[in-house]
Image 1 (cartoon, rainbow, N blue to C red):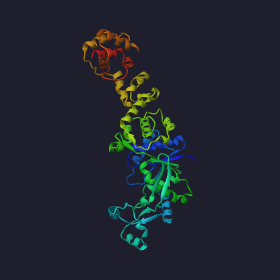
Image 2: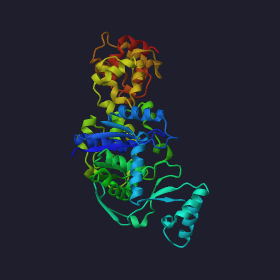
Image 3: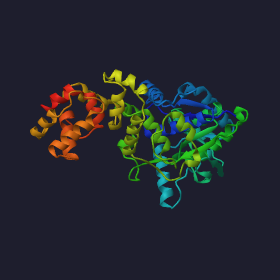
Length: 446
């Protein structure tokens, strides 16, 4: 059996960290098992879905390295959904309901006031043809509910283990709205069967849905000539660093915004692949390293903490681990390629790649030196070696120490401030060599 998984985003907005965590786990699982990753655009909401958002989803996934093997648009598959709906109607599993939203709301309130669960009472099943015709004459159009078997639906979840959902405590789900539009559930099940999806990997907020969907899977099995049920994996949801639900800002932080803000794709994938697992939260050397480490047995049941500070720490790690050969084209694009020594010197102080231009300016351009002790700077200039080589820093700073008596921070901070205009930064030995003697001399003079 070929492993086949799917990511089914809706193009009604940008995809964010919560969406992409599911996409990453699906992609990693497919790669690990030499399977197929399907991109299935859930654009059944024709009014809210846009081509712009659809294109942006593709751009975001490609930028993250999550290439797909098959791609579909649900909006082009309405015919098969209708055929499946007709089959369910013929089997008396899909039935017409004429209640308005206000009527349903009043019923729910009555049930709650009596201490009863607000479950749909299936009153529509008792409607006569004459009553249906009367509703139609009023101008009402039916919505269509799937008739649940009312049983304990059982499955073995790759994350949660043994799971049971009692559908007797659930309302028959609406699969088709009054306007004829298909809601999420039916197209999702139909596509999973028709596309031969073997594993459904998603958030645990879908656990109750799974009970409903498994009944629909079984009801449609004969239509597709018999089809095995998919295996499910329901991941714990993301929470903020404080353990509370994600704030609106974090929860909706889009991948495109992260890209625009200069974050590294490998930092994002490493972060979202590892939070909530027993793996150390460190930047992976590559996507394939994440593939090798993917294992649902490592995933805990507790909510996964999404801490933006952790993401930024991983972003810095990705840059620190980046070899010059990989960085070179990006340095050239920023007009900041000052060679391998430059990259190896400054990358340990970068939080985002674009910050490299600041260090290129410090080394190759003009700065405003920071000199608080002119006498100290004059003595440093006096002792500056005539030839400044790769190892001159230790010799020069040693001579300044002996001449002035300054040591530690009192010695090195004034030199760093004069040469770079900064209070912190990379190793001054390599940095001063890159700056060069002429610029060192000019900066010591202010």
